[in-house]
Amino acid sequence: MLHIEKTYSSFEREEFLEYFREKGIDKGEGRFSGVGWEVIVGEEFKRMVGAFPFKAIKLEIWVEETISEEFLEDLRRSFLRGGG
Image (tube, rainbow, N blue to C red; front, side, top):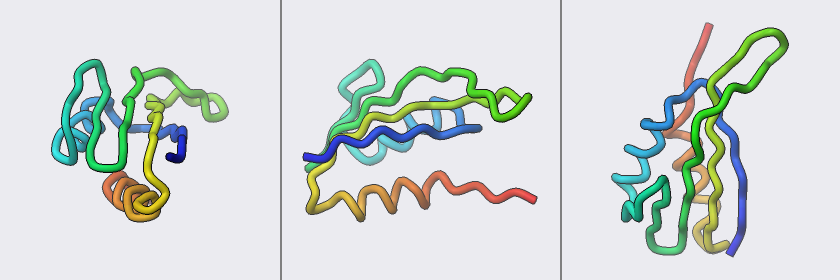
């Protein structure tokens, strides 16, 4: 099983909690699991980008190699944001 840590900026923690509730089983305290994966959604923290503070969330992901590309691509697509 692969262990991956990802940090996302400018998202609310609740957005990740809702996403993973739809995908798998809520084990409480930000921990979710499904077939071949488990995720811990961390608490929000402030991340400085230059002089600007942004909300950030750290995800700890454990995923089977056989589904890792599909799992991570779905997560990436679900949390894309355009700007401009």
